[in-house]
Length: 281
Image (cartoon, rainbow, N blue to C red; front, side):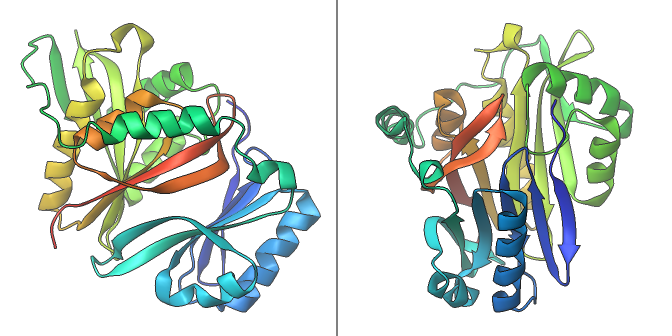
C-alpha cells in the first residue's frame, strides 16, 4: 500500500492529513477553539497542496465552520452519546474535487441499496465457516489479507503493528475462518466516551465473495457492540460498491449522505456513503 496519512493531535482535536487522501480530516474537534482549528487546518491544507478539509463536528459546534464556508455532506442523528447529531462538513480547495463524475451511477447504487432496507437476511448455516473475534496472534495474517484486498486504504491496516495498536486501544476485529485460514475480516472502531462505533475495514478474499460473510460479520458485531453499551453504529462505505452498501441497508442502516471524492481506497480517491443505525436509545 501507499504511505498512509499522519494522525496527529493539535490541542484537544485529532486530525489526519497527508498526500494519500490529499485532505485534512478533523476526526475529533474535542474542546478545541473552532476558529483556531479552522485557521490551522486550512493553512495546513494550502501549505501542502491538499484539496479538501473534511470535519466530523457536533451540530452545536458547527456554526463557526458554516460561517467559514463549510457545507454539510452528511449527518448522523444521535452520534454523540445517543443525543446529539454529527455533521460531516467539508470545504474544497480545488473546484474539480467537488464534482462527482459518476453521480448517476452512484445514485443508482444508492437507490438499489435503499430498496434492500431490512429485507430478509440469509441465515448463517454453512458449516465450512467459523466466525470469531480476532486476537493479537492473528495480526500478521490479518495484515496480509488486507494488503491483498486493498491496493490503497486511508489507514495502514496492512501493517501488523497498526492492527495491534488499535486492538489495544479502541477496535474489536472479527474474522471468518475456513479450514483454519482467515478469509474475511471487519472491525468495530469504538468511541466509548461518545458511545458510537464505526463498522469498518470489511474485506473478503475475492475467491470467497458471494457467501454473505460481510452480512454475518456485521450482525455479530452489532450484538457485541450493543452489549458494550454502544448506542449508534455507522459506516463510511465506498459509494461505488453496491455490495457493501447493500450489506448495511439490509441490516437496517439509514442513508446519511455522500462524501464527494473523499477517500483513497482501492487505488484512487472515491466518494463515500454514510450509513447509520441506532442500536438502542
